[in-house]
Image (tube, rainbow, N blue to C red; front, side, top):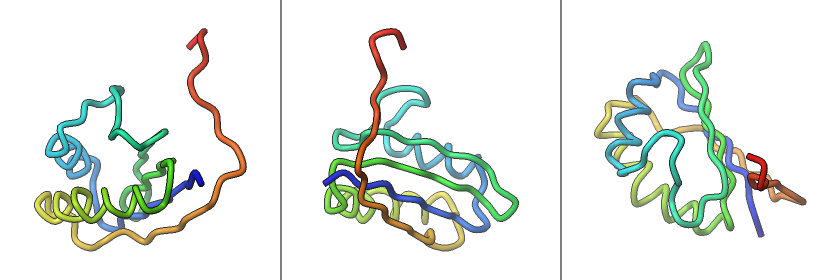
Length: 98
């Protein structure tokens, strides 16, 4: 079942986020990891907020353990994110006019 994951990284910066994305071999605006459906990030007063949609929670959790956690630590992000999961009823992908 598709799942949305809200990640709140307190004390993190967009520069640290950019470093993590680079370590993952991803390009801003480009394709994401194979099982990810969508992704966005924004700065907040407390750090950064990342929201993803993945095909399943298990696929996200495995990716987070293998890449998000280790690369976040390497980039100096001070603590793991607070996570909120939501099972999705529906989501949209880019249309042909996008």
